[in-house]
Image (cartoon, rainbow, N blue to C red; front, side):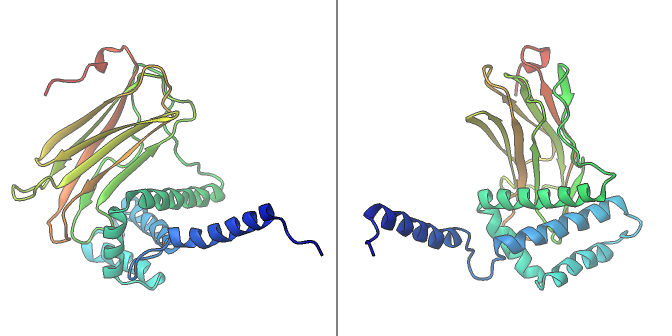
Length: 262
């Protein structure tokens, strides 16, 4: 029997090394929910939030809403403390969180498609000089017992937005107190082929806030995404409200493409 060539051995050795490396890349520390299980938990938590949003009469009090969230923890054999600790850890590893969140969102959309008479929403078409492309909830309330402390958005239009488009994210925040040091962090991003534009902002006061992102004039915009996150280091803060969300898209050269003065 002939001996395997060096190239063959190298290829099999490389495959073996990759097989060992891949599980290690997705490991989480002890006490943190693993990625696959976290994806399943996030699906059920999103569905629970949707149930509360669509049927407020069934869940009128904090106790009833919290009981629904606890039922999700019970289903997955988790405690609320384990979930909170895992959310804090994933919040510090945002790339992994975004990957799990997008997989969970895909699972939810697949469940909606399976029903047959409902279709998931997509980003609005890119026609017109100005368009509000925000298709998500307009109102969020965060408290010590909220299942999440962030608003995540991800818009991928079927037809790319025109090159040079300007995106203006607006929202109101209420409930911040003077002792909070830069309690809210916001990211707005636009993906243009091989280029990602990133705009960051911190919010430390109540009222209206805007983020103004002007894209490159030579490339179409395939995706607009980002997040707004509370940076409070623990869960002892009182209720904070985010509402009146809009994400305006302005065509390049339209009157609204001049950034407002500060």
